[in-house]
Image 1 (cartoon, rainbow, N blue to C red):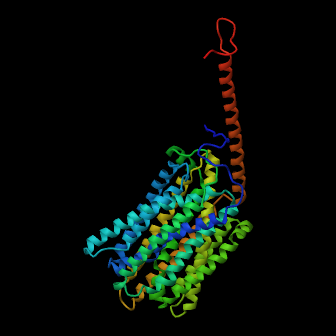
Image 2 (image 1 turned 45 degrees about the horizontal axis):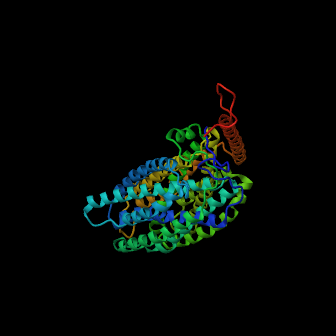
Image 3 (image 1 turned 90 degrees about the vertical axis):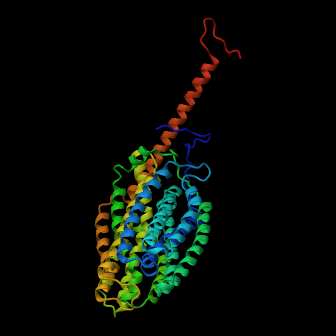
Length: 497
């Protein structure tokens, strides 16, 4: 592989490798980025189906089909975004931050549009819903792919990556908890909710822009990059044979399918099955406590047990919680709520380790090929996650339609309640078990990753030394050719100018 060197011997397009810990400001700034992400993402996953069925008047079956189609489109948008990111490099801002800087405002304004469907007839409203949500997903891909890839470029240290993953989880849960505590309890009268959604998304657009800018100016790419702009052939070469990435993608697809199912219908579960919508706010408060508690001990848990084992434990918790939610009688609210919390603990644990696991697969691909391709690696990972979100959200909506859910009625039928239970409990249980089975075959342990990073560093040193030696030999040859020039007569010590 050919490299060019600057005067300090750094590979072109790269930066000197920083071995020290990340600044606290950088960790907080990275977490702020996911808070901004979730002002668009979690708002959509938590309320968009409810908005479609209870505010816009779109049927549950039509809304489920919409979620499936558009989220699969979003998944392919991630691959496109990954390729664009891999081909892009800005000398001052790096590879990832320019996308966050310039893509954030369009993303947040499209979130406003998705929750502002005008009364233009059923066909027109459905068309608006498709187009606005599809554009929202496309914009999200061009912000979230660079954001997610940024962590792997900030550090290669497992402990520091665990801190970034925890900060990201805290940012996301902070937004989700805010929505659960202050917004979800207001979801009672669908006919009068449009002003609330409009005002809320406009405020989120302003706050989200500020959070994104904080991320841009507080973070920095510190990992050496020997190839600044990656070709398509190089991108896909790093994916070929990357078994850890493949298995992580499969497991994440399955886990996200179950998680999005429960996330989509959970508000229906509290409101229509348990008749305790106020518990949604209580759950959100508990989520905050659990998130900060788990984030404070997660680096030590990862160091003691490893990321893979923590992931497996989380899937067991989600499956157990789903089973409780599905079977708990409606009059045993405490038992059902316990199942919800157990499920949430499993979700949080996965959220705190999965991003570090994905970043590890970047090094595996670099170890195999010599090329770092955070963009396409994260894009493939996000593609499978988005597909899981599409399937999970659609299955939840189809569960409502199968049960015969009717918007606006005070009491749902027994079959409708069974459909809600299936979405909130049975689906997450089944898919958590499948995710566990896929992850059992994951081969990249923390010890193996540490060995890979050391080997990549050793290879880089050898390549840099070889490049310097060749450059010195070339300079020496040029100097010799200038000082001594073969002639028919005696050699001249200095050429005439």
